[in-house]
Image (cartoon, rainbow, N blue to C red; front, side, top):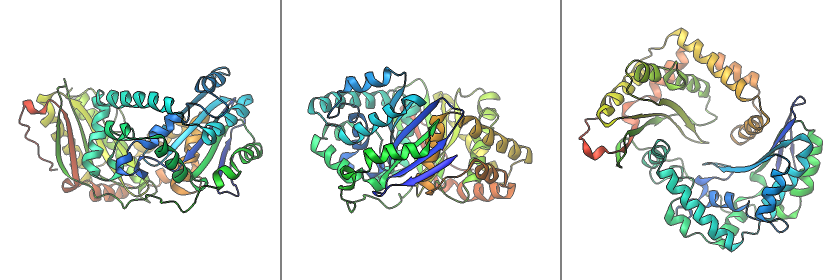
Length: 422
């Protein structure tokens, strides 16, 4: 059962009561991510996410970890392009501890200078590690190529130069400017009672500490990005060439989102998808190939990833474009459509069997829709998509003049003959 309460200071409290669960997952979400950062502070949201675990006025970093480990729970966080989440998963009897820990780090972190310097080194290693993982790094490069100078294109972790130039006063000001109660969502799912959750959160987060922050602070909401097209090659000595091809898609709440889910599933959303069957199973040209949707509040794209040897790059790109062209021309069978619908609904239901997945689900619904979307509504939305809906969307977005292709590998060794035509 879903419940929502809005406190007097505008903090939203969401819960999904799961009576048969033994766990509770609790998250404090802030509608702030890397797209809300000025260029010279790229990575500050992610840096702050790290620092909130490094000590409060009454707990050291070690004590924070010890208290959660002592009950076998999870305490962690992540930063995205449009939000940051601090979360815990515990047995239901330990929910009071999770609430106390999360609210403590959220309100009372001290941003100790020595901890800042230690964590700066950790983040620089994280950036280096990402650059040494080419199948992940190519996605960062694609975003930089596709979104160009827009904040959505910049890496969530930041760059070494920007991370090195962040100081304690920058963190304190950024938190004061961006961590406003109107941007805060507290979400919980599992074995809990909503009224108990509201009472505990209001006692900790409903006071003056958040309400005193200036609500009229600069929002740093940018215009939607101008999307680039073309071929972008990034040379690096690697055994494989990793590629990411993308085309403008739809935003998170777009009315055609269910058609987009199905289109993506048919193209490259599993082992039965066209890309996997044609490129890996029939020809053995890749180990990994898939398509994906990246959607934000105002923009999105349909992307395709593949990793292959340098000698097969041209063939793999041609095969990808051939499958894209077939969909753009309306070549989709009814059996494919029905299989994709069943796959999507099954994946959704299986993915929501845990309290943490439910906590994330209701939070993202609030961020992007301002309300909960029931599983019945989602299932009905998927089932209602017709073949004509898929054809309409595919012909609208799968256009060669809007495509971008990013390549990462030893591309200087061979003059690649690539042409983005379908």
